[in-house]
Image (tube, rainbow over all chains, first blue to last red; front, side, top):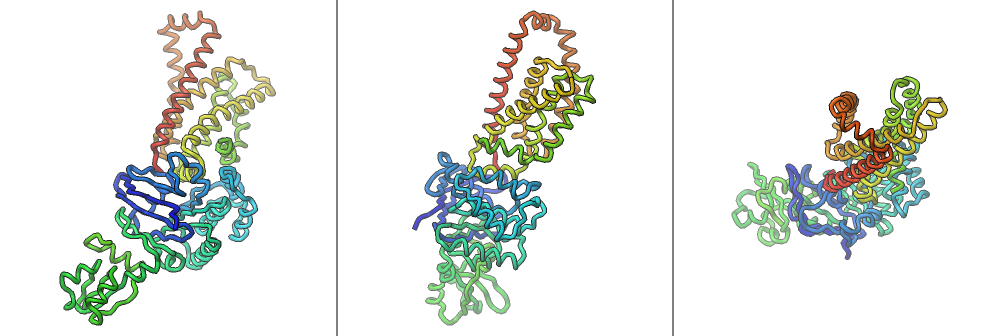
Length: 289
Length: 203
């Protein structure tokens, strides 16, 4: 399986934040969800991927090429959707097309107008009159009109109403159908990912905690509930974080098999959602994985 | 590259309608002004206005996400500025001609020279400044320029008579030639500085 994006030991120090020694692989042909709390480093990672920021250390390869010598070629094949509007606000889509289209060798006007029609976007209204959802669709239409093989979306669902979010997820599912595209998609609304992601990358405090297939995540992680008397030091090590209450404890583990073997029926287990994982990992005292 | 330069026209298509009335205003209301001054205003108009759009972080994110290199983005700015200045001067010349306002080739040369000098100083400064401060910087810079240009010229005339005498004695061809040389060097240095600043910029 090929990696479309590879980070090797990437470190970037910003004024009041840094990401350290990041290793990241994005698999070709799949949807990878990128989750993490606000301020965990999602946008910084995505900016590094787009070469808007340059790494202090480490290598970033996209399509097996590096930015230093292949910047244009990489960006020809990449589509982007940012969390805020990057297009000139006062212009309408027709004018934006006039600016963006000539930048790409593979621009397909027919495709563009087809998507505009499909997404029900007005061509003659200024972008500033667009709702958040329309702006997102406009970015997506542009990304899809130049045959982008890799589409990077930074928080595309943030600020969208539930109906539109579902519509967007359907659109994304559809564009993934032919298997030619790869999607990397950051969000803190984890239920979106449970629907469409094949892989999950989890970032916390500037470090990637894991990249796993959705199935692996669901197999390995679980919420464990039981009485306090089953917990001892060794057992504690099998949990990422334990929440104690007067009734007992709830804890997150990434070692379902181990817990089953040791505690068996003395505890109850239920599948952990991505949100559970995010929540418990945030409070974890130790770094795990 | 040509696309990036053409972009300047698309983003300010409405402001462009103001361009000709703006020049006409100067031709009629500024009859006391030297013609070269109007050429400076005309040459400055489009590139600086385009620039005010580009100061936004979002615009830089867009341009840098499209298949352009940072080197190309800066080059388009510097080449575009010369191109639009030239076009603006041609249009202004035509308007001068139509409305019978006298001017000389020297006015055009001096106007273009001053405009290019202003670009040379303002572009790197803009790339250095934080977005949002550029408008203020331009306004202050322009006021300073207008206020100080008079006294400076007077200062030179008064105290530096030998220098002025010398300049008077040298053929005007030599003056223009060396002026052109200095401005070209200034523009090139400015380009290199902007390039260095922009390469290091984070968005």
